[in-house]
Image (tube, rainbow, N blue to C red; front, side):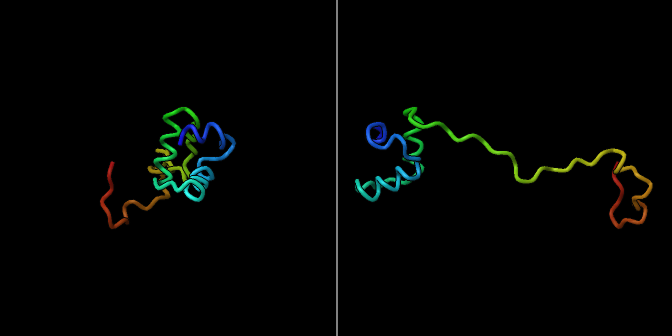
Length: 80
């Protein structure tokens, strides 16, 4: 499989290469096995990690201790 990728399908993405293997070469293994084998052989690079979709908000101390916040009337006990 790795030799076939290097010789004939070098310009294919891993996904397209896997689809071609299944359709034309009677390949039975899953996409993940194909991708990991190509990465282990050094034929394709691991994809870069993307940023998180949502970032956690950090409450500042000024916001938590603000007098506008009605902590005293809250049904939950105040924690410090």
